[in-house]
Image (cartoon, rainbow, N blue to C red):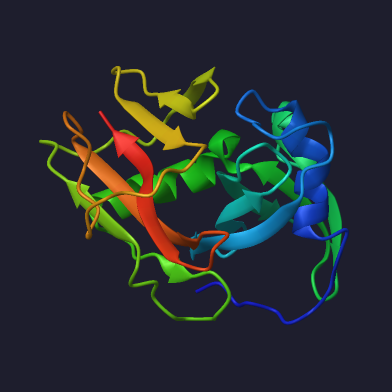
Length: 215
């Protein structure tokens, strides 16, 4: 069970993301200074208790139209070997000390827990409350047989990031979120699994949409 510490981060998560997001192909803002707010998200637990796993929805008001980005984050107490390209930055945690913050698509601990969530073997946790399930996160799984646990990022586009397993299974992360018309949010056509979550829109209404798609 991940413990949520009420403490400081220097720099904050949003400050780290403000420096990193403009370099991403799915960044839709204007210029190099996104105007970010935390709009939602959820957490998953690392069974070994070593890696923090968070899925943050960051709202950005810098472009002609507001945008909501899904950023999977992992927090580690030491650098992840071979993942220098995925490092968002480091931050000083008031309790845990220095933390290395990664784009979680490149972190095998996060990817393995996402597949466990899709299969229904783990439960999404509230983003900011210890030991509290997030009831707004929904998932489906219709695949025959288990999902592979080894994936590698193969495509990073203006809308999504695709992770591909050796057997050809694709796990797609929707980077730019779109509110769904239906609730609970159904799986997209042709999907063998999905995860949907919730976030706040700029007008204060609560949206739900697809976060991950398995094919």
